[in-house]
Length: 247
Image (cartoon, rainbow, N blue to C red):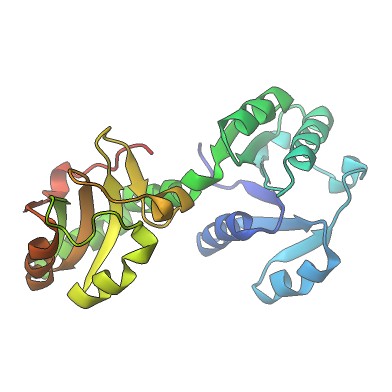
């Protein structure tokens, strides 16, 4: 999706909507926030966003959108029924606008697609998608390569969990003390079905580590060596061939 010179409308005010807005704002994209809750207006304005109060029964002609193809709308209401209704309403009012709707699960995503959304995103995947976009960005990629190559002590490694690991049976969010102890950051875990679970998504945080799982970690070389002794064998990742697996 080409977002150059686009204008963004974001409906909703949960953590996902705010994260999307913050990333767009950092890229100097024009963002207009819509919230159902008057109490959320001031906090959003303090973050530098233009905010409007709306109601699901609003007459959308007040938006005064002239070139619909120049707008991308994010429907990110927490209530699933309200989000579907909002998607239907906006699609009926603007046939050519691009609608991206956030869904809590695949079933909800299907409903939103039927309601008129051009694209649906399951909320558990949002952070992973944003990270992937950042890494795919040439500037971010260049920065990461600089870190990984110019400072040879900083590495990304894959570590296979073996039967002696002290991580066995623990969910990722309960391993923070161990990560702190060894000075490593667990970015993701690949289970035995080769599904990647990112450590900053709910699904990833709640996942219970099992023998044979592959941990993706970043740390100083010495820290990785020490962490290996508590988890299993590892090998360094060649950045030129690095790829995020789809969640």
